[in-house]
Structures are given as C-alpha cells and as structure tokens.
View 1 (spheres, one colour):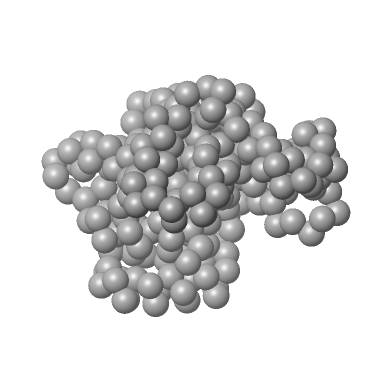
View 2: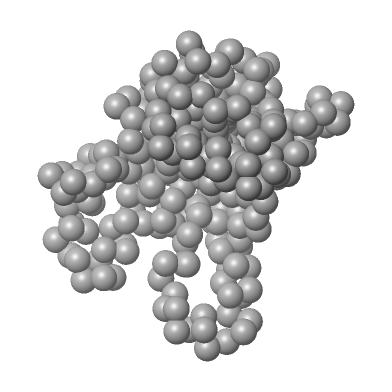
Length: 243
C-alpha cells in the first residue's frame, strides 16, 4: 500500500491476519472511512473491507473510486455514525479495525474507541491515526502564528476554540496510550507520522533527486523514537484486543 511507517505496520498486521485465516483475505473495518483513502488501497491489496461512514457524498465518492480501481466487489459500504457502530456491524469479527482521523471529530473519543475495540476479533488489532497536539503547536510556531501555538499548547483538548476547525481535539502520546488501555486494548505500536515532512522546504526536495528518498528514510527512522515521535504531525497506534 505504501512505504511510510504507518503502512509498514499495517502491511505486517494484515499479512499476519491472513495467515491466521489460513491464507484467506484479512477482514478490515474502516470506521469513518470517508471516500476510501484507506479502504480502496486495502481492497486492491486483497483485503475484504467494510466502510462505515455517515456522509452519503463521501460514500458516493468511495463507490466511484472502488469501481475505477476494480475492487467494488471487495468493499461493503454502510452509512452510519460511530456511536451506532454496534448496530451496524457484527461485534468481534474484524481482523483489523481502522479509526484514522476519527477520534478528533467524534463527540466522545473514549466511547468511540471502545466501539472500535468491540468490533475487533479477539486477537485482532485496532489502528488509530490522530492529530498530534505538539506537532500542531510546533508547526504554527514555525509559521509565525505564535498566538495560535500558545492557545493549542494551553487548551486541554488541543483545539483552537471558536476557530471553525472541524478538529474537536488533538492528542499527545500519553493521552492516546491511556485511551487505548482504557478501551481494554494492549498497545503494541505508538509512533509518529510526518515528523519532518511538513518542515522540509519544497525547494530543498526539488533541488536534489535523492532528497525525497532521504526524507522517507529519515521519517522511518524517527517514527518510533521519542521525542521526535512526539512532535510528529500525527500519532499512529496499533493496539490488540486480547483473546
């Protein structure tokens, strides 16, 4: 699917899930999956994917993408909200449950994460990708938006209040770990995505043919290393539901 640290962790988990199924396709549940940014590549890689998404427009785009990619037969789309997940999909059946870009926008992040955990099969995994509060502080400070940076740093939810942002909250690594453990999950991976990518000037990447590859290697090396992980644009966690 991809070559960054998030994709590498997911690729390994999906391969292990397929092996547990005796070579059958891994079953993925993508909650808040939108227009198929994750689900279509996963289906193209051979997974069977169910997408739960409240927006009919996003689901229409997902359908077009799946058709264009020739994977419509591997994707089931369900319209609905995360807080009704238990009524929309069977509990305990998904090998991997994705909640990418989800916990920032739901009303209750703890309840949403518990629903994701319930949907995972015993021994299955939950993958969450969230906006990182400290990454957002750093990026705004470097852009000269110092007042916004201070507001993000001081706000308990890592939100710019009254700004019209869709994001309702951002997380740091410790908060995300506590949420996952509180949902009854065992955290196996907690890493950053986008430690340097938004900080390297495009002119530097354009000036050298090898710069993009060097940046990719640097991102992979830094993804799991604190404190670099802790200032990434996003935090990624893979946590397992116990048997």
